[in-house]
Length: 413
Length: 178
Image (cartoon, rainbow over all chains, first blue to last red; front, side):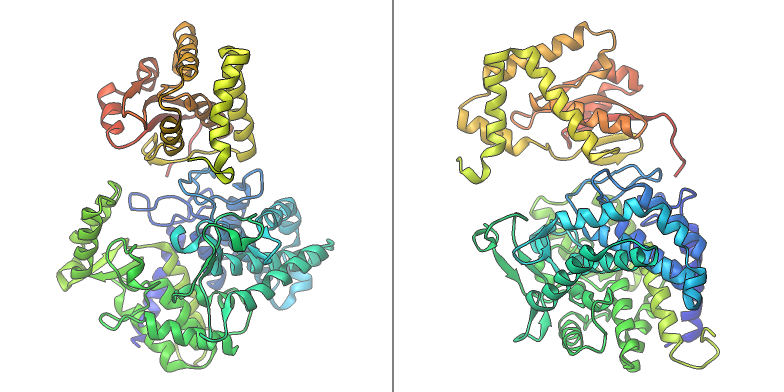
């Protein structure tokens, strides 16, 4: 891997995080004037995790303050907000946002105390926002199905209900991890959170059994169920399973519900690599091409590639870690990372599909123009949404983890 | 097609018809308004839909599918709906602040407007429903006073309504710069 270049991308990623935090605390998904100038709790939470990894605790706290204050009356965190924290969503419930905000808050809390947790941890911040934490957990539990002990959602990380409506793995892992974080924070400030502890463990057990296929030796994407309260769910109109490989089947380890060394995770990652590593341009695709929702053309995503680079570093498979992270380094343009990368052929194929099907929205026209006018187009590549802030946060986490495995000039000491 | 599983939206529309018959348009109008406000307070401050600067719009009609379905079953738009919409438009015409009323293209616009308006108020903002389009027959409706108050032109609203169903101009009492 080109280490000097990797180091520059790390520095620039920190710069990008700082530059794209609004004075009110929200991290833009992409810079103002580009495709996503809103604050999406999902991206925002990962940006907080990136900020924490980079030691930017002031920025992380400001970002948490922003999102906690934007919580809706029932405890939900919306799909997206404007810079003043007003709900500006246009999609149905995305409950992983609740889990992610709690998970990021828990990570901030741990980081403030670090090795001197008892003396140093920012308990005042947790106490100040405890009511919001309670509401966030209650909202998650409001969406839990008692028959399977899993959380129901309509959209998840890909915002694609056709494959995510039901009990989806990323949303469930995020919510479970969020509840576990809330339990830890509750314990630290002397709250009785025993009920949450029981509920979180039920969800964790369900993820490990109902969302794992022993014969496939892989976690699965989703148990499709239309209505959260279908009783019994076997009679629900959507009742089926999504067993296709999806990069977020790694979520149980990403959210620390299970170790990266666990054989279930290792075999799941093996399946992900075998099916989603892009053999033409490298990098990790998010799901199979035939799912048919490939805005900007089918191709690999930087932030998912970073996530799996982290897995390989965690499991001491440094050749694979280097291959994954090295690909991200090679793909950076001016030390910036795009949402995803495609080829001209695939881009045009997607455009043809969507144009013929009459499903190309007006809002995609700017993206199309930007992709075609980007310098990389001349190299045969379609760079979609550059910079997207999220991959920079994931890159910070992956780069630090990777570098810390070595005792060299680039290691963080 | 009616199934018990999906009966509620249709039951709600029948309830509007029956309530107009039993209690009249005034009470029905008040009921729809108060349902919108109540739901807005549960949901909290904010807006749905897409943005173009300070214009907020809904690319799809939120009740379109249900209304079309209902019309197909019922055979035509119930005259009670028209009666209620006429009453709402009369209120607007007689009001001193007609720009605060919806550009009604369906009876559910009454509910939608009170919901959207209350959520905007909770976000310290004011909305003007400058235009909307019927999902049933694509007829465009404008609130001319709202258009004037919003400082935009009907041509602009018309252009937007080619692609969307409901257009609001949003004015924040105080708004941070992006």
